[in-house]
Length: 208
Image (cartoon, rainbow, N blue to C red):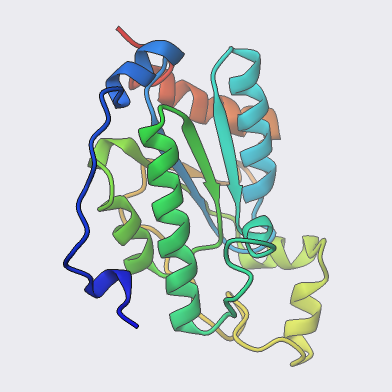
């Protein structure tokens, strides 16, 4: 059976209502806010806080959470390098659709490999992909360990765990970097506020 990637008899179908019309309707501009970092760095916390802040401002957003997606869209994937790559590719394609719909799509995934994140960036116009790096030290993430995964990884019960026996490749040119200040982590509200300020400054929260 031929796969879609090898098919030659498929054609793109344009509809009369496009991205510009949808953005005008929503009074905002579609984009992808891609939150990356180690397990326990605060990705989901930021994603949910940002989602709430945008909601209070009357802006439509949607969170694509890495763990949640593995319950459905990506439930057939494991954690080998090739599965991680396919995991990120699928999420990138879905995020692209949300952005095309005019939404502010908030993708929250470890996404450890730089080439995979860059591939997602390449799916959109560069300015519409906003990479947020949760630059928290491994010691902090491991101390939090709310899911108990670091403990299992240290005990050898989980193989290929990012930050322990599988690498995390930090962004080289992210749009936003969130880290501790004087050893203190910013609050969820402060983190969300930093991202909202960026979106506001770049014109994503209104449409003219």
